[in-house]
Amino acid sequence: MRPGVEVAPVPNDLADLGHFSDPSLLILASLAGGDKHGYAMIEDIERMAGVRLGPGTLYGALARLEQRGFIAPLPAEDRRRPYRITAVGAAALREQLASLHAFATTGLARLAAI
Amino acid sequence: MRSIPAARTWLLRLYPTAWRSRYGEEFAALLDDYPLTPFALLDVCLSALDAHIAPQDATGRILRALHQPRRSAITVFCAYIAFVIAGLSYNQMIEDDLPALDTSHPAIAAAYHVILYGSAVALLAVLAGGLPIALAVARRALVVRRKDILLLFAVPPLSLAVWLMWGWINLNMIAPSNGHHAVPAVHHPPSNLLFVSWFAAFGLAALASTAAVSIAVSRCEVAPSLFRRALAPAALATLLMFIMLSGAVAWGLFVRAEMPDYLDRTAGPLGETVYVAWLGQVTVMALATLVAAFALLRAYRTRGDEPAAEEPEVRPARYDGIGAAPQPQGRG
Image 1: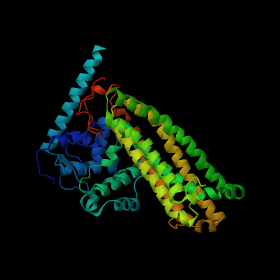
Image 2: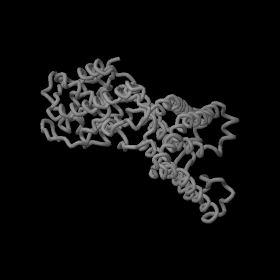
Image 3: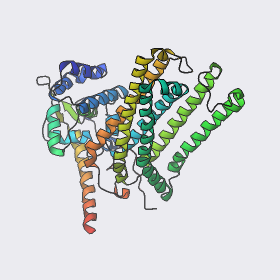
Image 4: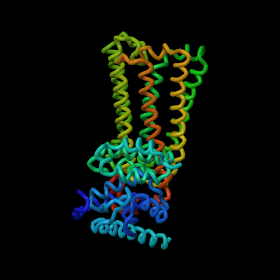
């Protein structure tokens, strides 16, 4: 899938985003707060989640997200290329976070009953 | 320290051409900003390897697979097995010459003993970390009646039996004249083919056993704390792998300095010299150590993200998007 081509993702695409520590989810959550280039994403994710992504990890995940149409590249600014979350990416992120929210709610409710 | 242009160029060259043409410029800009720590170097090397392995889908499969303690523990285990196979090959290569090396070349003998004692302690560390996990997986497989998991656990003893049977057939039926040797003798040309088949059978048995145990552990849900607790022994095993690798490198350098002719001797059944065989063994050891170290780094960097749930049953299918497909399982 090429950048900018928004195709409705199949459920497996969403599931593949995986655990909340997965770089893909962290990147989507970062871009949900606005367009950013690579280093700005790393710093934002570190502030947001306490996880500092390595440069290889970041770009491996960026390539995956771009191929799936979850993010789109913007024109480069002085060699640094910002990325923007797409509508498909926002939907995927929303679904994953809702799933995590449901999980956390259930877990906390069970803990409260102990 | 900040990345220097030469290092940045070298790192970029690790990636496939197509990847560089798409991301090279912006990735180079990122490397300009990013401190070039050893972790960053490892991260980029693994990412580049991933881009080569999965060029159509730069998903970061290798990197992602290493993120969780479970995946890290399995990766360290697989790397350790690869290291052991290289170490056994090294030991097989020099064992006939050990008495001479031990008495007349103390530096060479010392390097060898670093590997020998390191391997014993590393084995204990792997057992300390891995046995509780294996027992928990086997117990859970029995409780929930997962025959597939139990069958996977049967692979190592079956592989061992097949390998021993192959050795017995070799020694007693195909080449009975070698029957007095514990293994086919590599330095005797008539038995070269037998040695190759014997060692290849060992490699296949080890590969099958490692894959089966790894798949079993990745498929069966057990308490995540087991994997977190296994990280300390895994770290010790990885440290020992590094020490043994250093011993193996030192051994080669000492041999080169003290008895260079030894490196030109024929070492293996394929006619390779000791130098070539040693180079191959050290390369495998280095790669195995690198992979294990990276898996551990990943696990320690992300260990705070692992869910605290000790009971696997509460994990919904969508929650664990990495690794084995979760299967609803009751308490028995």
